[in-house]
Length: 127
Image (cartoon, rainbow, N blue to C red; front, side, top):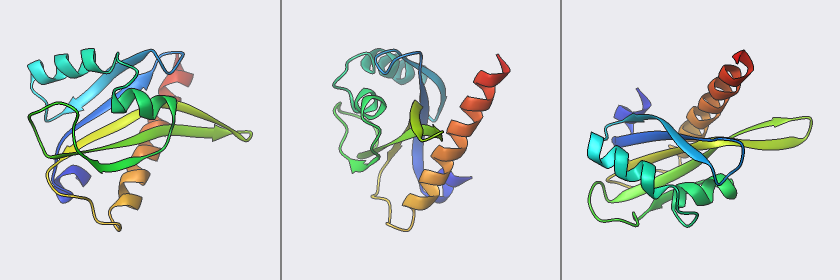
């Protein structure tokens, strides 16, 4: 598993529900119930790094968290698809980790984000 190889302590997938200001956490790993509930509330703030990544889909790696506790660093990868020249943000993959990712790790993380975006798109098409 990618998370184990890269020492990711927790991961969250947040999806965009219609517009970048409507976010829903749909999957998490490594978060306790209290932390997951707190994060679900925190991402409602447009200034939260996950909300900012949904609004401006640029990956950020190895940034300090805005709240105390947990691992030392966070990385946020937009989950996007491009069809007919138009890029759509489907969500964000957010990771918490202790050590910075090596430059060689980033393509692996971006590939994981691409696969997550594809899975979300396929799920939505099934609705």
